[in-house]
Each structure stands twice: as structure tokens, then as C-alpha cells.
Image 1 (cartoon, rainbow, N blue to C red):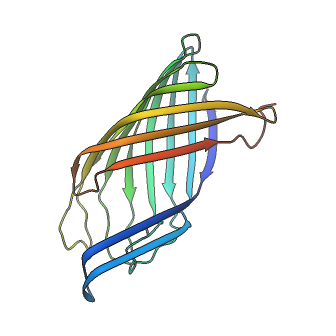
Image 2: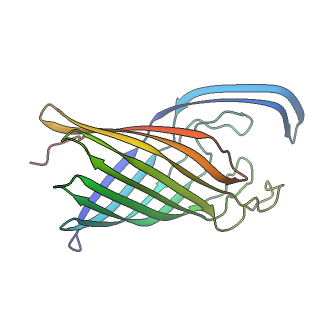
Image 3: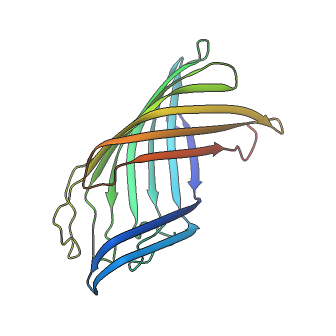
Length: 221
């Protein structure tokens, strides 16, 4: 398609959230020493991209989004879903040298959020940059460093935005480990990244760990 390779996917998962607040204020009043915990399904994340390859250079454009099907209640402290729809557009570049095992990837995008009708709150326009640099030490193992930057371009709005625009930002940096292996003649890939977050404003800041497992649903034959 247009000289490139199309790709379509649908992401979902199971997640857990545990929250404790010494003081919580809402329209119904103030609560003290409130806690909440939840294990449930996430939202659905459709994804479509178109990629091009020339030698060691790879480029792609994509569109993805959030379908709010995950567990969400405005009255809860702990939620898995975000309670509103979103769409994200962007592009990326990857340099990969199969001889040396060196790889660098960067993806940038902009996210538009629809209003959360449960809270009358609409998040502003978001921008994000995700990047990673790694090197294969063997045909199976790779190590590297990864990071991301999130910056809110426009403020929040809606009658529920009692704190005003509340524009936020955060950046992160940390190590990553990858492992690819064969299962039933197909190549699976596992990856673990740990991020130390900094430069935060109006946003949680801490240490985040992400683990992913890529499983092919069909062979390329």
C-alpha cells in the first residue's frame, strides 16, 4: 500500500491498581483515610500503521486510539480504564544494523481526547516522544536504554475542570532488556523496560516498569 507494508492490531490486557488517599475531596464531601484496589480488564487499543524499509532505515506512520471498555467508575479511586475515548496520530523511525546488532527507534505523536461524560472533564491535546537505543549481544539477547517525554500542549477544559487548565508534563529514562526465542517455529519476543521519571508537573512521578510479549498469530508464509 503506497509502497509500504500495512499493519493492523488490537491491544488489550489485564491490570491492577491500588490507591490510598489520606484526604479525598469530591462533590459529595470530604473523605479521610480512603483506599481502593482493583484488578480488571483494560480499555481496547486499536492500531494501524504503514511502514517503509530501505536498507537499515525504517519509517512508519500510524493511527491508534483508546476505546473506553475497561473497568471505570467515577466514584472509585482505583480504575483501570480511563473513562473516555482518544485518538493518537504520529510517525516513527528505526535504524537497525543486522550485522552489528545496533538499533535506535523514536516515535512521536499527538493525542486528542474526548470528554469524560462521567465527570464532565476534557483533557487537553497531548504530545509524546518515545525512544530506545539497544544492541544485540547475541542472536537472542539485547540490552539498551529507553526513555520518553510527555508534554501537554493545551489545557484541560469542561465544567469538571475545577483546577483550571492543569497542564502537565513528565520525562523518563531507564534500562531495557530484550529476548527473542522460537516457539513452534515462530519467533516470539519479550521485553522489559524500567523507567525513572523526572521533570514532572501536575502528574505522578516515580518508577515505572513495563513488560511486553510479542506473539505472532500466524506465520509469514
